[in-house]
Length: 226
Image 1 (tube, rainbow, N blue to C red):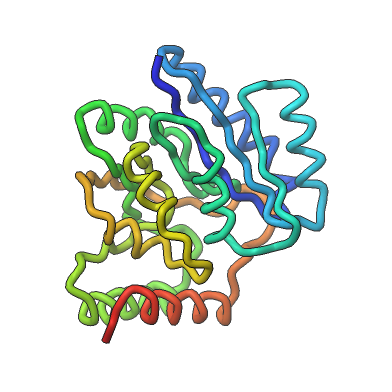
Image 2 (cartoon, rainbow, N blue to C red):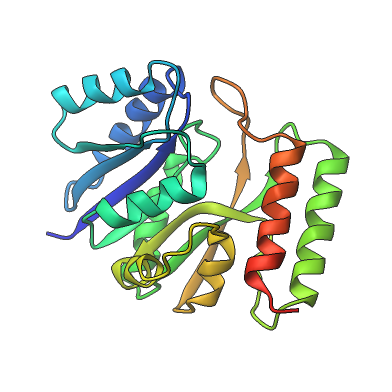
């Protein structure tokens, strides 16, 4: 039986976690031919996220979690998940349910067909302003001009990675990470699935203008030599 790990970084997601857990259980129960691991990474949350994870773990042995000593940011939280997840493939999904778990069966289907990186591509983004959409397109256009590696536009971290991809990413140990660029850099067979991104089910976004600007600078300085 193949094992599938779900990697879920969480920072102050006490309200979202019960809803997310219910949804992923509904989806994974339709795929009993696989063994499942729900790998949460608590990224130094200041609310009751850790207590929620401890409760889930006590009632479901598929739940595992890594508890970071402080808030390191999503990039480092994902690396911690890469290190500890044990699945034959790994699916990264946000805790706020903007990434629909209903795509998981399609991701696995393409993985079984031989694709090693099956990524979700956004068709629409609910609740985003025109300016945010415009600056996002401009950023990716600039980044693509500065590198010879194809950049996957309108994609985030919501994707399935085969174990061979996870192992490759684990070998890259830099602390200032731009994982979205690394997905392209490591290569392997890729397949996109389009979806409509919804709004957060609970809580508030952890990204503001300055954090997004920092991520953009990180992408340019770490993903290019120009």
